[in-house]
Length: 104
Image (cartoon, rainbow, N blue to C red; front, top):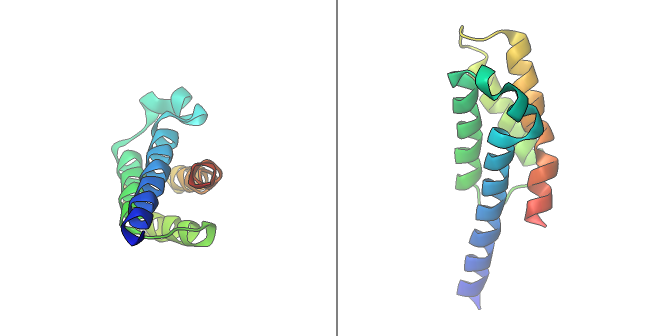
């Protein structure tokens, strides 16, 4: 029973990560602007996905805090404007709605 619970939990987590990745890369807003996406934006999205993979459980508050910490780290780069970073951070935070649907 314990092993089944771990497998089920891993499956749910994998589904949430897959949903997040698909939304980040292929969401409605991103489909329109995919050619404009810079390397740092893809790397930031990848960092969010990697962090999600390492977490055993995730809830809205934890996810939002994680996005803020990663955004703070990227704010020190000179290759982007503050407006671009703000826009990407908002998009990542709004992605929680889609991730939460996959978790349930």
